[in-house]
Image: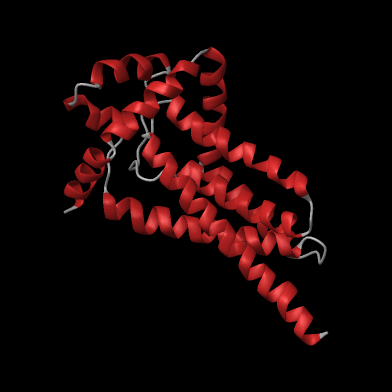
Length: 207
């Protein structure tokens, strides 16, 4: 069952993944690979701990409590969805493993080698880097946008760069990144809704 689900996802997204790989590889060069290497560290355990710690710290001052609570909720939800439920449930292997038996392998291998032939020790679907960054930024930006701070939309550049970097680096399928983005956005919006209910709606009721 473990391998079957991963293989089914490979087959279902094969055309989508190969098309998106071909598109994004037009931008693969020393600069984008360098950015991808930097973004790699945003998914390390230490980075997760730092982001989570900052979110928790933001929960204490009254002025930043809304942002901290939204980010903590989003972060925990994304972590549970990705690392506890979906990754082990689907069991999709990395593209440098599963693409070896497809006609796309020779093309993929060239770009994977150009990116440094990186190996990662966990499962592929969905992208943890993408989901976590989208969750944190969506939570923070959504709360800011409800406060009419429209510049907060610019924050989404960060998770977009992270997601694209995972494709440029050839360690994730584009469908891994897309799913990670969707999960992260949903988790972030849930965090924002919780904040809106407890910090805005209930405050209006008691006023």
